[in-house]
Amino acid sequence: MAKAWQKMLYSCCLLTACLTYVLAKSQPDKQDRVHHGQDLSDHPHDDKQDFQYDHDAFLGKEEDNTFEELFHLESKERLGKLVDQIDRDGDGFVTQPELKDWIKHAEDRHNSETMDKTWKMYDKNNDGHIAWEEFKNVTYNYFEGEASADVENKERYMKMLERSELRFKAADKDGDLIATREEFRAFLHPEQFDYMKDLIVSDTMESMDKDKDGFVGVDEYIENMYSPESGEPEPDWVKDARQRFFNDWDLNKDGEMDREEIRSWIHPPDYDNAEEEAKLLLFESDKDKDNKITKQEILDNLEMFMDSQATNYGKYLTKEHDEL
Image (cartoon, rainbow, N blue to C red; front, side, top):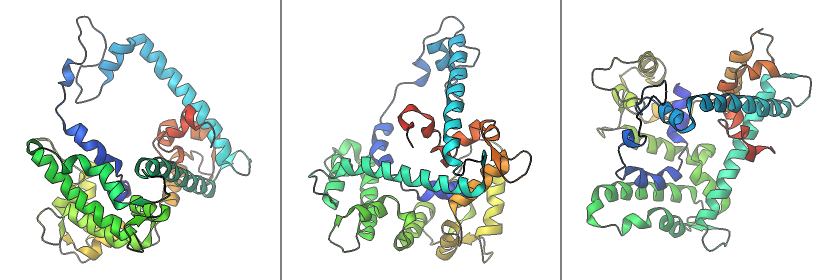
């Protein structure tokens, strides 16, 4: 859980910033999306839990069950084809090194695809570079000219603009405010570049240090992962995260993390994400504990592999990713 949180924390998905304004606008009440007189679903109509009622109402209960069965059958078929590519030596087994290499390949491919799409969005004059002004105009131009009615949103985005500019300048090695492809990749994925690590630490402190005292206490650490409902008991995983804060991240045992402890937390020495994920997938799938997994053992754990980087979180099991 802690490693997953770290990845989420510093993955720096800039496209989220572009979408937040739309999501912040008022939306119609979700409960009014489906009108129902008869029993359209066996599931409660509670969108706070899930949208299964709406799904059943749209497809019909029997059709929905058929859809789910077809979805899993097709996903298993595509995962089986993927396994053949992961098994490089073709011996019918997938080993931890093969999984690790594939996960690295999947990550590189995903980053490359994201980079290509993002580059086209921002390189407006098609000169093979992205100037800071080009990026700013696409991402923040609306808010710079926004009316006073949206002052709250505007102020929030001006703060994001300031942080984006700091990150852009940090990635821009020659300081000309014009990013090459490699510099823009460092801007998008700072966790992949050693010279950007100080910025990640600063961003993390800025985000988590709510009282601005230069430290991150355990409550600030938990607040970034979990917001309890009124009267709700703390889940076990939150209790575990709280304990891990004191055991693993608070190195000097003073009850809070300083800048160097934050650095150790988000940049643990000798940590290889692909290797750790490969270990986990192998451990969970290897029922006979022979340190290798068959195609069937992988297919038996379809849901877990769909939720892993090995399938790009399920995206590689769709038709548009037939060729990998």
